[in-house]
Amino acid sequence: MEYYELTKLYELLESTNKRLEKTKHIAEFIKNCTPKDIDKVILLLQGIVYPKYEDKKIGIASKMVVKALNAATGISSEEIEKYWKKTGDLGITAQELIKKKKQHTLFSQILTVEKVFNTVRKLAKIEGVGSTDLKIKMISELLTSAKPIEARYIVRLLLEDLRVGLGEGTLRDSIALAYYEIKEKKSIDIENIQGLFGKDSELTTIRDKIQEAYDISNDYSVVASTLMEKGIISLNNIDMDVLKPLKVMLAQKVKDIKEGFERVGVPCAIEYKYDGFRMLIGKKSDKIVIHTRRLENVTKQFPDVVELVKENVKAETCILDGEAVGYDPKTKKYIPFQNISQRIKRKYDIEQLSREVPVELNIFDILYYNNNSLINESFEKRRKIIEKIIIQKDLKIKLAEQIITDNEKEAEKFYKKSLEFGNEGVMLKSLTAPYKPGSRVGYMVKLKPVMETLDLVIVGAEWGEGKRKGWLTSFTISCYDEDTDEYLEIGKFGTGIKEKDEEGVSFEQLTELLKPYIIEEKGREVKIKPEIVVEIKFEEIQKSPSYNSGYALRFPRLVRIREDRRPDESSTLRQIEEMYKKQ
Ligand code: AMP
Image (cartoon, rainbow, N blue to C red; front, side, top):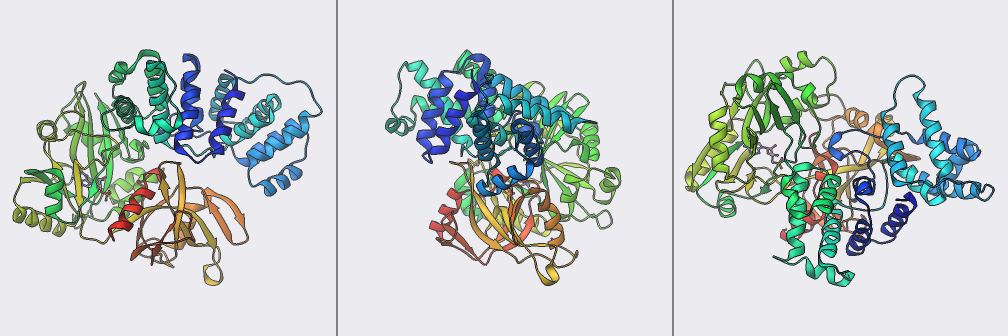
């Protein structure tokens, strides 16, 4: 397939904000993909060449693209930078410059999807001496063959910033629609799509199956190619790989025990809600892999946990879900998440840090055991299995503290006890429910005493003045819009941050954390790639025309940095709309 065809689709997606229109355009496209191309197309549509969980970056800096453009067009780097400043988009800049150049040359080679995909993958792998020159050469060769519109999207792909506004939900619905249309041998008009996604409808069933397969594989390219080649039944054969990351099940919030009981049904399990770090641990004989809820591999950072699992989990293969809680080695008391968060990013002195900030592993679920998936089994049964296979040791590895009850008084007592132990609250869990990776379905709910907070993404800041010179200040925060895969601004915060490196998060620490993600600077204003998630306390949500989410927070204040959250896991626009209505 020609890459040009894909860029035409990108253009269509960029031209509309309407989710259903996007769904239809993509479905049409998928229907015409050959089996050879479909997996690549699905990844490229998301602006990636490796599935997201693989944690492999393309790693091309904009400066390198400028040099490649210079080599491809002969236009000086200064000129290119000037153009870029004007357009604010290096992709558009590339498009315009290639257009200028092509007026003078006739020669052009046809680029295929495969060629672009493979070249970008190769680029991502090159390292070592001379790698910069080689990369520039390869990029400039691609750009020399590219039509102007192709140059635009190649550059954006290289910079991992595709800007076509495609959320995962829309991609999933498009795959479902394509399959449905092929199967039914008809083409659905845009106006009729919404109606077909009704309750219990066939299209909804297909969509849910796709979602389930995605929650297990975390890769739409595998799901789409399996579905298109072998049909819907074959999605059942997409199996878990215990060494690959999976999305964890998420919890909804409740305000008290009574609401929790109503939500999960009684009797239910109530467990301590540990204030630690969520871990999904895969075990295959002696090989142990630890992933975060952001799907990042943190095995190297937690050699102590690897040993604990090796020694104390009696299973040939399994996937365990749990929370690592830090404790003070002297007092043996639990310490808040913020203190162990430094272990997540640490690359050196790991052994020493694991002694200074030891963790206790609290296992609360199991998804896979000795070659069988358990996600469709009841929680009661899953808990029995962990009770059987884990050898418990205090301050090393434990099962989550649990009671089973339908009695409010007993539940309240347990909640109080949990807080006294330094935990965040309690979790209430349905005994009969399956495990739903990636979902906040309400099979487990959380109860905490603190006022509401939101997890928001930092997308901008200002360079400080006076005594705050050299630090970023006044941080712009955004929520996530699932429909468009965009981050929408909801306010600015500057409080809750320490001047010095005392207890808590300091300006300096935030500045260091955010610096690598600065994408644009104008005077003191800084634009930041949505990457860092923070927990924000506030008084109230208000309607506001000042921010593009349509909402603003009154008195926002930083609680903590959430290293364990992916940006697309932050609070969504829909959640904020709901909270606003509830106020
Ligand atoms: P929150 O981070 O406020 O959304 O609360 C949900 C989180 O609580 C989960 O993602 C886990 O990291 C954590 N957690 C602590 N203890 C438990 C438990 N016993 N069961 C499930 N999740 C727990």
